[in-house]
Length: 310
Image (spheres, rainbow, N blue to C red):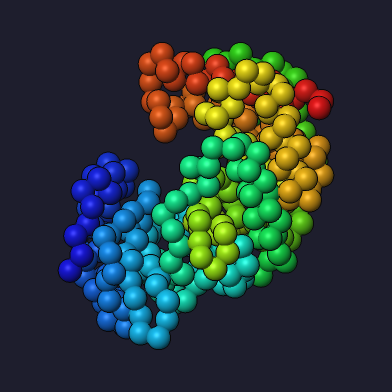
């Protein structure tokens, strides 16, 4: 049986509590059962992401693959549906699926991610091209982002009223306007839903392929916002933040073949959400203290900059 990585196990229990511990106890048996059913043998060290383990495997007559088993969570439900719809177009190939166990057999890619590329323009260009390739007509049954619009607006207004923050009313109103004007009527296009450089990996079949999609249906420009938000730490190092932000928007919109203003409006919405989120929960790299205060101030500054016209 596989050994569950200690860091992954600890994080799962901290996040999920008793249900997480119970699932971890069953995980080696689940993996063994799937390996047998799908005719695979382990072929390397067990890896993990935030919510699942990844077991490198081989299956007779096919190339190397990975078995991914995730903790059962609503956010993971539509990952295999997205892979199935893309059929390898810009994303890893889905070979087998077991939805009850939140398990998939996937094409194996390299462990190197787009986040390791030093050239910021290259990172954003690759992500934009992947975004364009993933934007295909959506199959039925996937979650429509437009159905989240009312909840988005309620939360924005609630946070603006109840939290202590420095965002101007103009900035919050701009995010609400995006929800009303772009959020409630969105195209039926399949999008990644969590597009960032760590979710784009080097591959052999193509230079880069996407992993870990949410399988949302909506505006492809929405993912321009998720990408820019993920680039925040890189933007922190810029000599001219305004110039760096608008350069990122320009490069992404051109590579993704999207309307530049639309990308900026979604990015501004994501930035306002992130500024409020930090005040509620902190950020992955800082949950409290001076560093959190500094990052929250930066999120506010980013939201303000994105409200400006380019």
